[in-house]
Length: 485
Image (cartoon, rainbow, N blue to C red; front, top):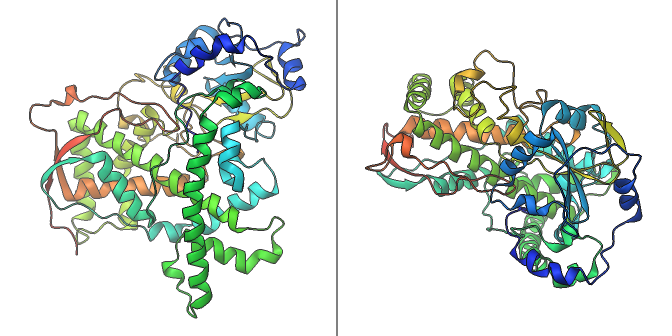
């Protein structure tokens, strides 16, 4: 969806003098909420006229900058991005209050101008307001599309060549094969744009090119999806046979529409099918591939962990005709610890998808005003020394015998969020990571390119909806066993 990297502000700075000469408006309810002197608002850094707190975020890695700011101002912090109030959550107790105690208050997503353009055809699962439409789509996603039976039907394909591979694209290719769909590379915008900072300003909308670029990209993507959905529909209409074992996600959604259409409170339209398909394809590739990329990087940087994980995988599957099975995956406790530790150090989404406060409430003794956007810094919480000894170290062993899991019950560790709005594709994503990572460790021996030592491996990251490695991971792969036919 909309990719807010919070990193490029040159355009904004160039336009600040112009903004001073226009009336920047905002909804009265929001103005009254944030300016009410009777409210005890969370602390935050000092602000400048017009741009608010934006100057504190001149960083390519805002999740790190926000973590540093929270160390000075506390686990609940108020920022002003232009005229938009943003509450940043950087502690487990505050995260629990937002995602559990007051989950009903924070169950809706904020909508920016660019996001409204993207969601012309419907809100989908991620950004639907909390209500019957969202519940219906979420149920279809979790129960029908991401059931255990369907997860078991997706298996990775491994590379045979002995060469130096770019592991990042290799992993993405494997995930695309698992999902069974080809996806376009889509960028809806890589910066905070004026319409986000000043949502009520007509000048901001006129000067920003983001909306125009977003609309053009949206039209291209959804024209393609319209063709694909129509093709699936026509094939279903002309086919006399139903092959449920080979249905893809569009077939399943069309089947739900055909079987339950009259009983659904909110009709499942063709546009809704397109937006859900778009969400599942983009989310189902980006998150798992990023996690696997980081897992391989951490294992290469920690040879003892690599040796232990590889030995475990080969012990389990060497006696099963060298074929990855669902039953065998359940016998890989250390590999699961590797995956958990990877997601702790490298949260798939450093800042969880934003929530919006629907009514004024108190968090940790502070007033959160109605209409404020709330960001949970999952990355900062997962590296907090209050909850994690040696938080910067890669230690899969910390999860051995631990009851902490990523299912949203432990608020010091929420890589998929928690509550009503936690990621519905969690089980599917974890299954992909486990399947592909086990395959890579079983069939190949891995080495760094000549001259590169484990300690020299670049672990720099970029920021977006997901935090990818800044540089592609280059490894030498040597086939260890003959791949199954």
